[in-house]
Length: 507
Ligand code: ADP
Image (tube, rainbow, N blue to C red; front, side):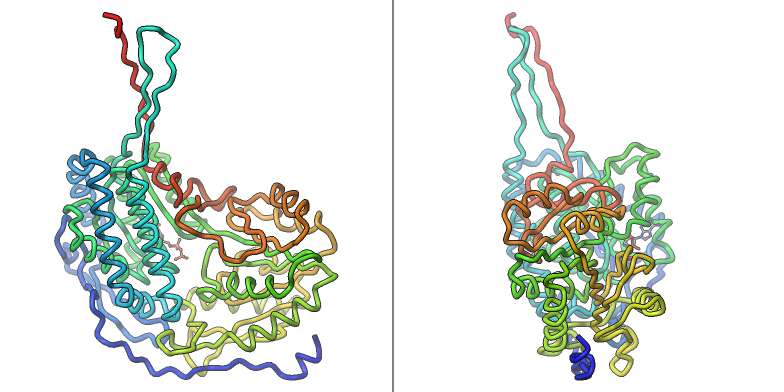
């Protein structure tokens, strides 16, 4: 390790020259009841590009009253949308999918501008987001009920699935497009309508998606987008959680905010679908194919600069392969992590999304270093390219008293922890209140089954670093959330089971 340190690894930077061309699909109004509208008090707030802090545009800074108007539009639309046939809903979703496919590059440019992620990654997000539109277009027609053998000769027992009603959709900034399609396509397939409150950092992808939904013929009021600054998020959030119109709250974001929303939902006994923070272990056992593990480690850690709830957070590496793993990781980081403006060819790591996020990452690394961890690469801001660029970092000598050992960092920081046994790997993995994704690298089949069974996580990837797909149920256990997105389960979340007894069939 020290030889690499002495070799003086330094990061490559691509100096930015921002070239945002005029973005097609860039909207600067909110979308309510099929119309593009301003806030009722005419307030606006600026959406900025985190790569250079330049303003992209302003959008309405809506308040509680605007949220209520949007809920009423969604409620009215529900009365007709719920009665459409599954085939009609599937056909509208498919049309929306096609338009999003045709506009993939435009959508990706918006995502890069507002979130900072490299364009190639933004294109990946759009493809991923679109896959949910396609998947739920298909799923709409398979939300079957049941006829259960009746215990009575003259009665039938029917179980049908009914849409829950109006859903409040509150989304984060890290996947500004995909977090919307993953929820909205599912709830629309089930026959529900919604009000979306996108993150204040990234409302533009949501508005662009709404524009394409409008073009696809989604009836007015089925999708509404209410934009709001952080200042108004809690007032708007309160209406979206507590108003009687709302039947379900679908949220992706921090565990902290998720708990606040869950509390508000409880007052009205509302359904919730919560996708909250993770703290994913990335376990490498001695039999693992090390090159494969390292390639996947790069994806699992540095996709979106580590700003993903399923990002690998704690690298638990068996002592037999620890040195080789750390050496290989350092080499890959040095070669592949190229910071800069996401619109530039070759850039793989953009800025952190906002100042709060940048501060959090740097203070967690500083905490670790002050307690004895060593940064073999990185460990500081790349201030020469921008105020939100943090160098891709690899820490060793990480111990349990450090924040990085226990908490999700949500940034480009690898924390390597040496383990000596399967039991120790499981103990450390399961020692937090999070339980979203986990990664396990082993070629020992019995070990793979044994360990995956004992990992208290909603998702386990064995010998892989990317696990999310529209076909599979995504979600966590413990404080990582409630409910599943994707798969057939993703649409079922937005349905209530209705039992109907039909009697007197002999008369
Ligand atoms: P992140 O740290 O990823 O931004 P947050 O949980 O803070 O995660 O934000 C996710 C979403 O929750 C954003 O759309 C944000 O505006 C919204 N949000 C934050 N606080 C509240 C609140 N009190 N009520 C409703 N929504 C909120």
